[in-house]
Length: 393
Image (cartoon, rainbow, N blue to C red):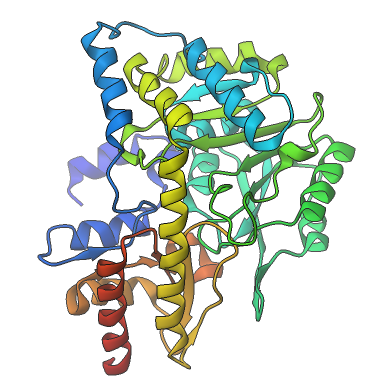
C-alpha cells in the first residue's frame, strides 16, 4: 500500500477500515470474466425478472412517475404487501407495518440502526450470512455467535446455548430461518420459545425470513408472524429478490410495529430518501401477478436440490444433508480445510463458482455453498465438473 493510501485509510473510522472483504465477492471477482463459467456463488437463480414486472415499471416511468417518493413507500405497494401477507398467513396485516427499502440489505441496516449501537451485543447463530456481522460492525455493535451443529438430519441450533449467550449487554437476537447458507429452518416450537425468551428479557428480534416460500417440508416455513403481538420487539426483513427474481432491482421491505413508524421513516429519509416509484410499481405487479412465477421458482429449487444431493451423495468424502429450506447446498469436503483456496481452484480448474465457507464465518471453514436455484442443464453440467474435480484433486 502506498504512503498516500495508508494516510487516507488511517484517517477513516476504524469500523469502516477494518471491515473484511467479502469472501463471496472475492471468488466472484476472480472468476467473473472466465469463459464458460457456471456461477453458483451468489444467492440468485438464472432466471431474469419476469416481463410483466418489467413492463409495470416501464409503464410507470413512461407515465412520468420519476419524482421524489414517499419515504415509507407508496401506499399502493404497502397495501399490496398487507394483502399478500394476509393471504399467506390467513390473518390480518396492515399497510402501516410495512416500510419499503432499498433491498433486504438496507432493511437489515435500518433494523440495526434502530436497535443497536456501540457496546451492544447481538446474538447470531452461525454459520451465518456475513452481511449481518458487517451491518453490526459498521455501527459498533459486537456479534456473539452461537455455533450450530451438523448431524445426520441436518443443521440444528441449541436453544440452551442461544439463551446462555445472552448477557446484560445483549440488545438483539438475529434469526435467519430458513437460513443462508445452511438451510436450517426453525420449527414453530423453536420460534415460539425464542420469542417468549426475548419478550421476558426485553430483547429485539431481527428476523430474516427471506426464504420463507422456499421450504421443502410444506408450503410455507414457520414464521414469527404466527405468534407475534402488537407490543413485540420484532422486526422482519424481506426482499423481492428471491421469490420474483428481482435481485438487481434492490427493493425490499421491513415489517415492524406501526408504533415505531415515524422513527423508521426518519431513518429511511436520512439513508436513501426512499425507493423509486417505478420500481415500486414493478413490485406491486410481482405481488399481485407473481404466484405462477413463484411456483416455477419453487419447482426449480426442488429439482435443483435433488440434482445437487444426488451428485454430492456419490462421494464418501463429502459431508452434506439436503437443506430443509432456502436454495443452497452447504457441504464439506474431507481434507479441504482452506475453502477460499479451494474455491479459487474450482474457478481455475473446473470453471464453476462456489461460495467458500469461510465467507460465512470461522464456524463454516471447510464448507462450500452452492446456489441450486438454476435450470437443470447447467446445474447438471456444474455437478459433472465438480464430480470430476473431486475425483482428481
